[in-house]
Length: 295
Ligand SMILES: [Zn+2]
Image (cartoon, rainbow, N blue to C red; front, side, top):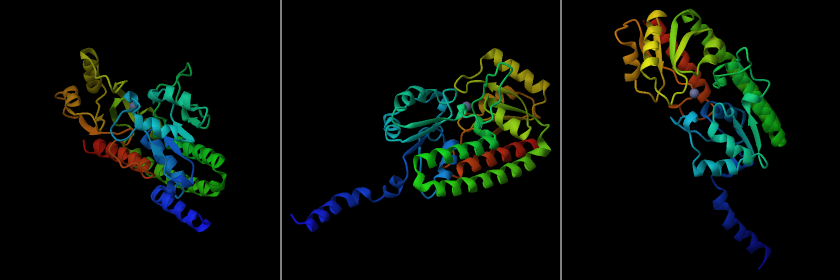
C-alpha cells in the first residue's frame, strides 16, 4: 500500500466523522448545569465552541434526575460549571466521581461571588445569578478557568469576557432605571428564588408562597399567604412559567388590587445560548414593571 493510498483511506474514514462536530472539538469540552450559567459560559466561549447544557427547558434543577445522555455529556467534559448542591443536588454524586478527570467549578463556593447570608452565615437562596454583579463574577471565573485549560485561546476568552462584562453593565443600568419607579410596590413571588434579584434592584418582595417549588402550600400556609396578600397590600403575585395560575388566583380570592404575572428564575421557555441570560433578566424586569404600573 502506498503512502498516497493510505492517506486517501484515512481521509475517507475521518472526513465524514469530523464534518459538523469539527468546530466544537477545537476548544475544551465544557458542561454547564442550568440555562443562565450556560448562557454566561457560552458568551465567554463564543467563536471557540458551545458548552453542553444539562438541565434543559422547563425541567426543575431542584427535582432533576440525571439521564443516561447527561451522564455521557458529563463523562466527556474537561470542565464543569454548577452552582452547588444547594441548587443542583442531583449533580453532587456524579460530580464527585468525575472530579478526578475533569475540573469541577462550584460557583457558590467561589469567593468572588457575593452571597446573601443570615446572622449564622447561612445562605438560603441559591439563585445567585439573578444579581448581575454575580453574573459578572461568573463571567470572570469562566474566563480564568477556560484560559487555564485552553491557553492557546486565552486572548479570545479575554476579549469575549470583556464584551460580556460591558453588556452586563449596560443591562444592569437599564434594568435599574426601569425598576426604580416601582421599588416600593409590594410583590409576592412563588418560590424562594428572588432574594438576589430583589436585593440587586431594591424591590419590595414581601415573601414567597413556597420555599420548595415542588411542594404546593397546604391549607395553613395558604391561609397565611392570603393574610399576607391582604395585610401587605400585595400588588403582584408572580407565578413561574411551568405553574398553572389557578393556585395563585385562589390565593388572591376577591382581592381585586392584586394580579398574577410571571417571573422566571431559570429561562425555562427561552432558547439556550449566550443571549438567554439577558433575555431572562430583561423579561423579568419588564414583567415587574408591567404588573406594578398597570394596577
Ligand atoms: Zn429555584
